Each structure stands twice: as C-alpha cells, then as structure tokens.
Picture 1 (tube, rainbow, N blue to C red):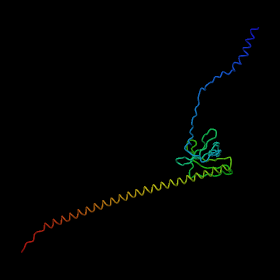
Picture 2: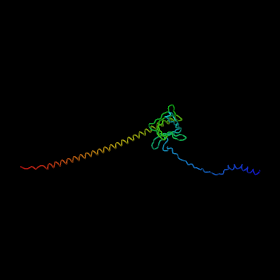
Picture 3: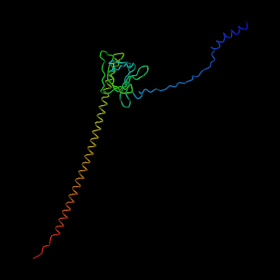
Picture 4: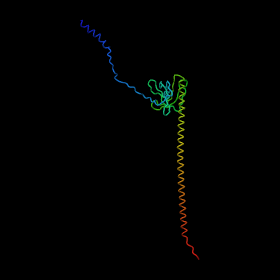
Length: 227
C-alpha cells in the first residue's frame, strides 16, 4: 500500500514540469517579406480626395445600383496633364469608377438631394469602356459642392488644353501648306523658266535655219552679163 503513494505523488507533480520555462526560442518557419504594391497612381498627383458612396444607373432594371463606398479621387498625370476620376472601395480597394475627365462632361446636382450629384462618363472600371450614368453621395452638402466645382474646373482646363492642341495642330497644318505652296511655286517657276529657255532655243534655231536658207538662195542667183 505504501509503495503506491510515491507513484501517486509523481503523477500529481508531472504537470508542473510541463509549464516550466526552458528559455528556448523557436524561429518562425516562414519569413514574410514586405512587398511593394503598385496602384497605377504613382505618376499622378491627387487633386481631390473625398469619402463617398457611388451608384450607377441600371438601364435594364431602371434603377440605381450601388457600386461601393470608399474614396473618390481626381488624379492628374504628371507628364500628360490629363485628369481622371478614380474611386476604390474602402476595404477591398476594388475599382468602382475609372474614367478621364473630358471637356464635354458636365456634373449636376441630383434632383431632391443636395448631397448627391450625377454625370455621364465612358468608364473603364470593369476593363472595358462602358457608357455609364453615375450618382455620387457625400456626407455633407459642402463636400458635394467641392466635388462639383472641382469637376467643372478640371473639365474647363481640359477644354483649354484641347483648344491649344487644336490651335497648334492648325498652325502646323498652315505651316505645312505654306511650305507646300512655296515648293509648288518654286517648281512652277522652274518649269516656266525651262519652257522659256526651250522656246528661246527654238527661236534661235529657227532663225539660224532661215539665215542659212537665205544665204543659200542668194548664192544660187545667176550672174548678170554686160551688153
């Protein structure tokens, strides 16, 4: 009976040994390295950045459908100067709007809601161009007005760029036409000179032939005899 007691004590003391701190350190099996993620916005400057919720109009269902809640941005490319509207969902960062701001675009307040506004765009969020009618809603009237004012300002600035581009193209065209006209005028002048030269040479040749003929006829005349 007494021999069983130590065994019982050992069983009771065994768990205490499991919790003993040995001081050993275990290295992680997999080492994770930080990876840089490209958003495609590295070459662009942010002109506007606002929290909002975006909707698109479903023509088939004749109703508004939510595209996502997140941050809407106006991004200006550092090299080309072109500006696009980009919106990503907050959690997933999925793009729900991605299109250029062009001169023909207009934005207006959504009827009956001063915190919302609407506009048409050729959007590329789904990987292909689609004509969309968007509606965006902000937390405040002030943010909505800020968005609309910036939208119109950008569209106007792009219009100026297009006009300057057209003017430059027109000037280049006129310059090319001027050069072409000059070349044609020089070509025509050269042709006229060649024609005049040929006519002069022809006249001189005909004159020499006539003089030669006259001289020959004079030499063939009979000599006069004295009485």
